Length: 471
Length: 93
Image (cartoon, rainbow over all chains, first blue to last red):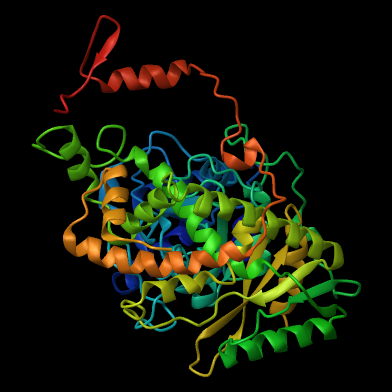
């Protein structure tokens, strides 16, 4: 698959038409999706019509948008009016969006071609894409392994060359961890950078739309289109969006990179080696790489599981068969009606709702939920302090490379540790990027992660862009 | 942090979800492990942390109703009929 910049250039010059590009993407999807299962629906005819409209626009001499003719996949929790959005849950099997999310509006305004919906962990709860009601996704790098999650379908679609750009959502690492497992680039901008309007909520204080691409330049192009204040989302930030691709530099002279103390302790040797090698490359590029202390970051994961589960228990309360979701038939009484309707949630979703509901009971509210909120505040202060000393942080994206399908089944808590290095970004509201940086001994991709302060995505994009040239 | 089967059943009831005895046993052991991990947070001194209203709520926009005539017309169109300015919906129970 061509990159975004290659596609837009080829279409602008007339070397290729948008229809040709779209048909090529559809062909790859038809060939590979039966095995990979990255897409849960492909909008074939609609995508071709959309591509033809873009070609007609070009032939009339009209100005084309910045993503003209680029096939884009959207995660199955992002609304596109008139299309299903199921969160890969039987609960929303027949839900059709009644309005379009801001991110899809922006893609359409940029002349992108929305090509289909991608598979995901049910309601974005998972790190392996094994909880989808529509079947698991296989990692294109090794189909016996998971692609990561929850945006596993989006990452696999880019890695398999089906599309050059896919949207995901990231609540605890759901864009960056699958990007790392599949060997692609995944960016989660800082909280508030991209509108969440029309994105089905999991945990509202941590959810963020992100992008998956084959290279950093493309990710920067996509972020230029998607970022910005949205009057429909009160948490979106009123800040100007830089032209990220114009901020790229030739070296990293003057850039301070922090390596958080303790983050490499006990880490799988192959990943540790890649982080050390990345630090060395950054030094060669002129960066000042130093160890920094973020003492409370290690508490991000337990904080994350309490806060996001509590928010999920509230957000998913609307799926009661009356307001939204599957409506049980022939239930005996209101209580049974609710319980029968909500029986369609999968096991992981039910578990998170139970965790969250329990953490919000009067017995546990102060000890669990309120405590986690206060610790989150302290973690944020830690990050604010560290970003007074350095510009970006370098960390692993995940403690492991892609694991085998079915692994961790008997110990789900061990699966929660897959988010160890990514959930601090959501707890802190930071900008984060995972960029592929070599392979482990098994030949599986290793991602390294950069964190930057909120509204400073250009810093992490620039350092990741230079690092990817070192491979 | 002590978690019992009763706690799991209570949380299930509050969440309007039926939890089978088998599920309850699975959730009980997994919740025990998770909440033991969460217990680590108790070691952190948070006495000086004051949370603002905004931090206690993810939704900070004032709740002002806005009538969207186009959407209203579209919604009315989806109902089979109206009566006394109310839409008639499918019987639920």
